[in-house]
Amino acid sequence: MSSRRSLAASTRARDESYMKNLVLPYLGDHELRHIGPETLDAWVQHLDEVEGKAPATVRKAFQLAAAVLGRAVTLRKLPANPARVGEGIDLPRLDRSEMRFLSVDEVHNLADTIDPRYRALALTAAYSGLRWGELAALRRKRLDLDERRLTVAESLSEVRGEVSFKAPKSAASRRSVALSGSLIEILTEHARRSPATGDGLVFTGPEGGPLRRTNFRRRTWLPAVVVTVGEPCRFHDLRHTHAAWLIAQGEHAKTIQARLGHASISTTLDRYGHLMPGMDEAAAERLDALFSERVKHSGSTKPSATVIKTRS
Image 1 (tube, one colour):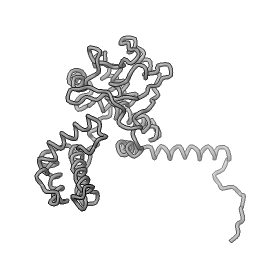
Image 2 (cartoon, one colour):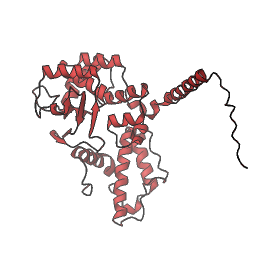
Image 3 (cartoon, helix red, strand yellow):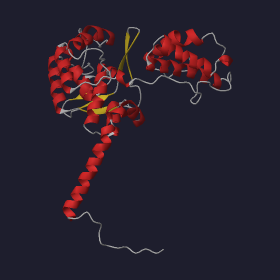
């Protein structure tokens, strides 16, 4: 862990928790030279089938163990990493059903039911795709209501009860996002009711300070979810919903990547590619429209009578 100096505080706290609770209890007493693919496979099976951990949790724990073993190779304490790809360790598949996609009516019903102070927060999440930390760190000076655009330049992090502001998680996360006219109207009304100037935060807690995710989830989010769309539904599912809406409208994957702040388009496709099958048929229909337009103007589907002679 000491060699991973670029980690954000929240990521470091999460990884330390995974190491303490999932990795070390099973692998901590093993000598490095005795950890082989069969040991790792048995450990993964234990987390998956015995402890019933979520696929994403098992995969993250495995990644951390692989990082430890990779570090051992770098320090010449192991000749090779037994956790590398191709060693036949069967990791559980990620469950796409963990994502929740809401309809437009469901989003507005939820936003209209939640504490009015946070109505604009919920709608902005669904119509912009920003992460929780990005919304909680959004400052008034970075929200341009006239140009209908906001800039993501900070993210709020809460680690062990301590709130801090940091740079976005990647260069791609630092971005400018265009906003719809209807969302601008909602944010304008929100600014009138809860004015913020200068470095003031757009969305704040009950007493005007930074939002605290745990408190918001327990006191505000879950009660509204229970009486509207039903559990399970996380605040992060509003970001998934935004991506699903863009895909349904036929937006290009690069546009979706840019709005969500993904570092690469492969991340976007890996996460939401299963929602895109219909886009291929839509592309074929648009090509058919081009063909029909050509026939309408030329009056024929036969090839041109022009013959081009070529040498053998």
